[in-house]
Image (cartoon, rainbow, N blue to C red; front, side):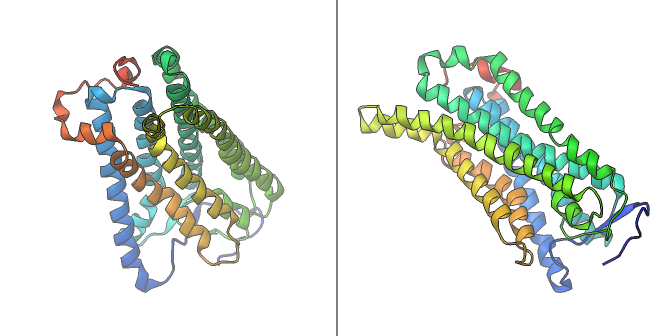
Length: 322
C-alpha cells in the first residue's frame, strides 16, 4: 500500500483489479474478455432487432432498447481497465479519468434501475388498463419517462462526485477494486468520510434501491391483483407470461444488489465478486432472458432484420402491439 501525505496532490490511482495472484491474471483476462464480448454482441443484437423489426416498436421494447444501451455502456466503463491492464501492464488511472469513471458508473447504474421501474409501470398499464394502453403509453409519455431516467441518472451522482473531488487527503492511492467506485474511495479518504458515507447511504439505499423497488413493488401488487381476478387459468397464465421476462430481470438484479451490500466486509474479495456479477453478468443475462422467455423476440429473430423500420422513436406508435 502506498501511503500518501496529507494534502499531497493526487495525480493518479492504482487499480488493484479482481485478484493480485499472477497465475490467475490470464484466466481473468479471458473470462472478462469473453463476458464483455457476449455483453456487446447480445445487447447489440437485441438493440438492432428492436430497431429494425416493426413488430417490436412498442413501449416495452423501447425501454428495453434503452436498457441494452445502458448495459453495453456500463460494461465498457467498468471492464475496460481489466483488459487494458493485462494488455499494457499499466494499472494506473489518472485522477481525472477515475473521476469520470466514477461518475459514469454511478449514473448508468441508477439509470438502469430507473428504466426497469419505467418498464414495470408499462406492464402495469398493459395488464391493469389494457383498453387505455395506447392512450396512456403514447410516444410523448414514453419519451418523457426515458428522458427522466437519463437526466435524473446523470444528476443524482453529482453530489458525491463533487465531494470526492474536494478530498485532499488519502491514506493510499491504491483502489482495492477493478474500477473507480464509491466504496473504495471511502476506505482511503482521510477527510469527508462522514459526508461520503451519508451520501452513499442516500444514493445507494434510498435512490438506487428503496425508491425503484417500492415503485416496482406497487406496480406488481396491482398486476398480481388484476391477474388473480381473471377467471380463466389460460388468461392468468398469458397475463403473467407478459411480465415474466421483466420480473426475472428485476429479481436477478435486486438479489445481486442485496447480496453485494449485505455481505460482510471481512470476506476477502466478496465485494468484488458481487460487483463483477452486477456489472458484467447481469448485462450478459438480460438479452438472453428477454430472448428465451419472450415469444415476440423469438419470432422477430426468425424474420429478416432488413425488412423492419429503423426509426427507434416510432416504437410507441404501433397500435397493433401491446
